[in-house]
Image (cartoon, rainbow, N blue to C red; front, side):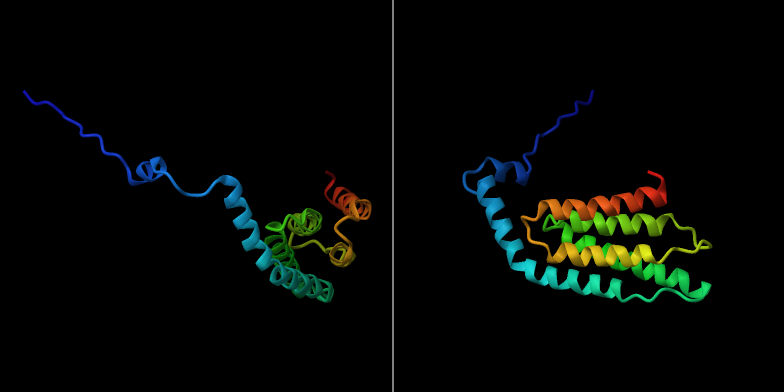
Length: 155
């Protein structure tokens, strides 16, 4: 007759967790925030460049230009979300996400009212220039963009 014997093995991770030392959650958060603060100027530079590129996108003239231009607008908005998201720029992310949602909802055969892209780009410019404590102004801008989104998508 055979007997199955199992030999419990303690993982390296559980051994490390049980040892003294390491960082407290508060210290880890402070260290992470300090690392983010170093990257914020570069992120703001990237966001500004993407917003300007979005604002400078020319309205497509021919139907053949429409889809590639919309793809460029979507890519730029997505890159704004990527750069602004880690710094909790929620209003800027909401504006870029709203534009992505509108661009996503338009079928390749439909014509997009390009003023929507222009308004979103100008709104993002404005949001970048507003002071952090200008909450009422920020809310007004994002509110108007939400109305555009609601009107276009019926949500």
